[in-house]
Length: 220
Image (cartoon, rainbow, N blue to C red; front, side, top):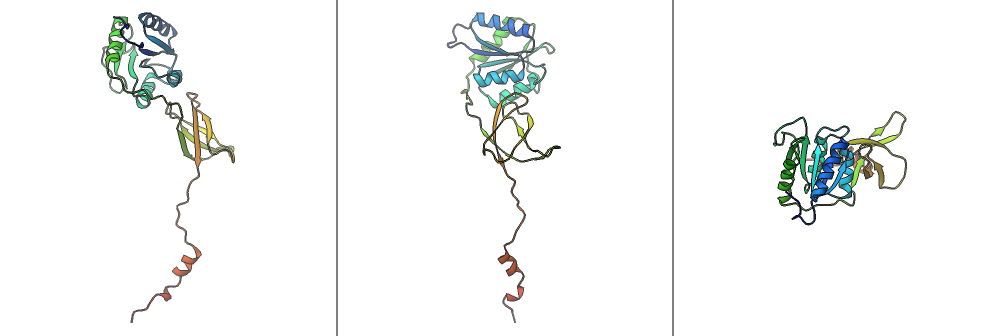
């Protein structure tokens, strides 16, 4: 079963914290004719996706840092064109387990032929247009509070890995600010929206008028 009929070659991204598995799978799939990149964990996988969106992502589920469960959820939510294969040695069968955001499941140790059948099946499916996000969206964030040292901070949810981190903000700087996600390293651009006081306030003129009910016409 070869990949020669696919032009251009299918782009794969292999994600596994075991360097031996990454090396073996990459070597076999490159020899067959796929274009293969690899990543050691979920965070580095997101960085690779930002560089170039793959056709198929093959990810281990049990990894430190960002697990495969989290990675697949983020990929499915943000990059709908990517076909996703979950893989694990602790699960059996070929069905995707409930709660796993994947199109297919590969059990480690079942052989390359089994994996190739899954890859070929996904490659044959109609692909959605791949949207490469080259310009980061600007986040609008309100100031949160002051930390123990008195510094003002904001809470930012990274649009890439969907994790939240705190960012200390200074004084009067550019209205568009830059932060780096402490989890995945993604650059986040944000602007601070000052909170609005919605408490009712009356002008002196209105208060003056409201204080003179005697000015209203009298009925006799």
